[in-house]
Length: 280
Ligand SMILES: C[S@@+](CC[C@H](N)C(=O)[O-])C[C@H]1O[C@@H](n2cnc3c(N)ncnc32)[C@H](O)[C@@H]1O
Image (tube, rainbow, N blue to C red; front, top):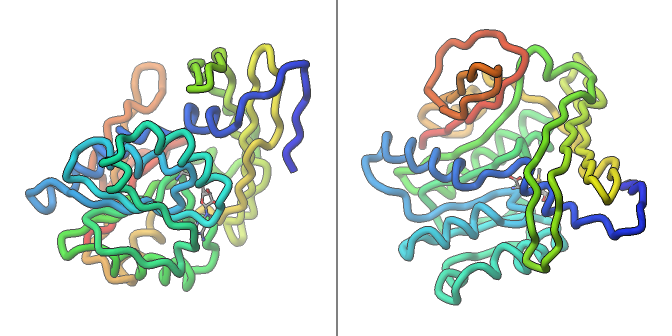
């Protein structure tokens, strides 16, 4: 249940705050293209965004090149509707024709074969059973062309399994297309629960927007925190020929340098976000 501490102004739509805080779709797409070209020596043209939510990544792909085509799947119609209103509306008529949004379950829906599939912001962690995750990965593998790539992300590190609420980031403000000016605001990542026996975790996102107040539990996730090794193993069990892990380094302030390199070993640091890539 979302609880808003109300001031007299209506709280900004949480999708704006979410997108500004946790999504950088050009970085994700650039990463996918770079790794695709490394493996297959050509540019990918078609993508599928699973758990697409507001379909920001799929819409951006359709916008980036007239040869691009994208599919997005999500089972929450109101979030898809929001994406159509705000992300798809940026597209020209021709670009929209190359974007296909599907209201459905990623475990059931099929799409034409694509070059790259994405499942980002840890969304696949809703699948807590190994068999279910393997079935999902199999489905993705089947939807890929022979020269295909599946890009996932996952977080970890020594602090990823601690119950804590002190991960606060200052996010630059923005003006929405409706003309609402959102000032710089705080994004708070709250790791509320972790069970070391089965790796079940519950995390919340809170936002603190000056002049508007704080919204508690704007988003809540109940996940299994999969390990990098489990993901690599399950991708291979599902039919991918290999699975790779790409991790960043840190800048002088201890923040991610956002440069993702293929790794076989990594220092056991407090926190990281990795891309895991299944190669068909
Ligand atoms: C964490 S959000 C991800 C949004 C966005 N793709 C991103 O990268 O930030 C998870 C989304 O997955 C959707 N979802 C969860 N389980 C799903 C399923 N089995 N099939 C389709 N969509 C699902 C939810 O409706 C929600 O929009």
